[in-house]
Figure (cartoon, rainbow, N blue to C red):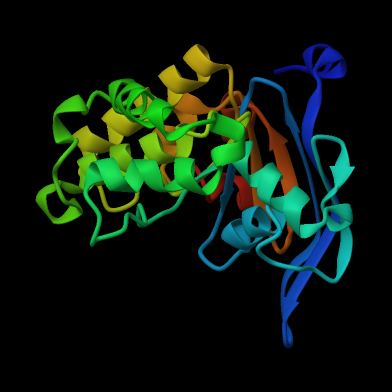
Length: 251
């Protein structure tokens, strides 16, 4: 996505000067980011660089000391509790460990967010149709009555993705979507995320260490180094940089 394209694109998320510390550990030191409508934005950084902290700040799960976080044009700190709840129905979150409820079947896992947000999705008789559509999106219709312990790692990740999509979010946040998966399954998850963007026109922030994932999926990338947006551009632009800090990500 070049400058002329971003100039006319709607900004879905805008972060300016974000600072977040844990005691004397200054994790984010003035981080900036914009997510544009319909793009896949990859954020890469070393372990402990603040990537996951940043996306938690986006949805009000973490507070911060300085800076502004705007989601859909509104400062996150201006949201009341009810508004935050509504906001989270429009933001899907795929956690690194899938975070399925072990005591619930696949069907019950998918029904849970629908029941929590009845006002948006109407009466419960619509639930099964939405559950089946979500499973169809990830190609796992046959898993309806299975328990999480009966699923492979890749299947768990797909079901978690189905659960995130069932609320029909405008924005998706992916925290290390391929971590812990074998190379073949990781490629399947990457292809699925890409197809979801194309099918549902979602805007996505993808936190990843996976270079293949970043190369295939990103429209644009940000490198989070020393708590700031150190570099930004396409995969091709960043991988061609001679800056040693940037090149360290592509070796």
